[in-house]
Image (cartoon, rainbow, N blue to C red; front, top):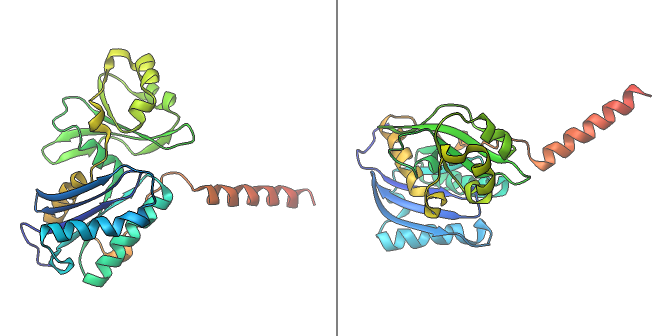
Length: 245
């Protein structure tokens, strides 16, 4: 596939309550919309895309690359964003890049001299987390993503670490209790996910030829959904009953 050095990129994030859309020309941000409001992404996402394209003077056909956040995050939100990008990619016959929500958040702490711990609220008194190291190519994972109770996660951390994500203000007293002065905490604005950061990661992948197709773009949940857990529990109960019949 022939690629442009300065592709026109559309990036979409609906993995959390914050919904964001960005247009980039190569690594240059052209426009970005961030809505941190209580509404369903299906109500706002297409409108955000249309608004930014209009303001930038771009047409859908002008796009060279589509970027979607693949998770972890809200199961429903992820499905909405990924379905939107898959539909556009199929209609436009454009390549796709999937970006981790955790890596996107790690982009908010550029040039960090210590490991970056993404600390994202996963509800159910758990956090999604992953350790990254900042390099010339952006944040590189040091470990696999995981979902844990916040105290268990914090007890795993050794040495100075910078924490970022909406779980930081939520569990700030606990962070101070367990990590004390080993925890480096940025200002509140740094915990806001911005899909323009994912667009930059997508641009890097595009230049390296690390692309995928709409059909292969899938969500990464890390933990099973409530429906899957319910099905598993029902199966376990049935299996137990069968053993005693």
